Amino acid sequence: MSKLVLEKLAQKFGAAIVETHSDHGDDTARVTPAAWKDICRYLRTDPALDFDMLVDMCGVDYPERGATNERLEVVLHLYSIGRRHRVRLKTRVGDEDMDDADLDSVTSIWAGANWFEREVFDMSGVTFKGHPDLRRILMYPEFEGHPLLKDYPAQRTQPLIPYRTEAEAGLPLDKLAPFREDEGMSFGRKAWGTPGEGEPS
Amino acid sequence: MAATRTVAIEGSESGFATTRFEDMLNWARKYSLFQYPFVTACCGMEFMSLASPRFDLARFGAEAPRFSPRQADLLWVVGTISQRQAPVLKRIYEQMMDPKWVLAFGTCASCGGFYDNYTTLAGIDKIVPCDIYVPGCPPRPEAVMDGLMLLQDKIARGDRTPGIVKPRTDPALTTIRKKHTEDDAR
Image: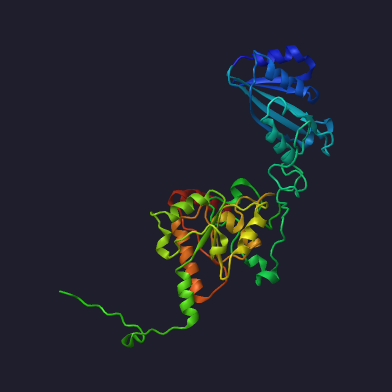
């Protein structure tokens, strides 16, 4: 794949393109959050680029980058059906406490961004400015926090209904399931290094 | 060459058989389980194969699936139950009429399995009583049939303590399992 996309972006936006790289035919550009929407609109409307398909969007948490207001990376994958080329666009927002984790919504450019942005909001806590209906899409409204942030405890659940008590069950709760959590699995928890229940993490 | 076979049961000479009323009722119940399949995940494929002619669950008198919990007395929980779904499952269970039984099909329904995270209910017994656990990922059809027969046995005996079907070893996976057992021992 040619570097046409990256060249055109650098030409047009200059300093708003923080870094670029091309690897295995995939072009990536990291841009400033302020220019996010303008760049997206340009990618969509420029006839030589014509990115008419939003393939995927996701959020990635890097807690160690919080100090520079770059904690969350929002990654956008675009594809042009007519030109048959693709590009990956990244930007970073938010500090350690997830303040300023907001970004312009691109739903006015690709309607398909609607649910993707809701997912990024739900899982990673990025607020999309100008989104028509920004609410949780996978988790329930009562859920607190954003589960894909690295500071969300891996085993914390938020049940919607209270669990049965021992009095209700009539037998000790640890006796309910007479086996451990990997029962019946052909591979154990040790294989991927996750601590089991009651083991130190 | 007509061979005659006679089956002697108590009182057969007079044309009557005696039993206790409860036993007779339980005998009738265990062979006419009306099932409500609550299917949420990949184990559902396994359930379909189990219900279709190859493994033929109907042989055990658990033939008719009901698509209203009000008509069912055996709840199959087949697949992962998310926290978001837990109130739904509980409500389904509450709508069933007594006597009712619950079978946890697969590791996820039994104890959560590897979905040890923010979204999953780690075992349906946290919210509804469970009679039979059939762990396995997915359980082999034979294991589920074992579970069903175990349930029938428990119905006949009036036993409500939870039972578990030990997973059978899949020959294709024994090498992996063996490796992990060795790793554990180390």
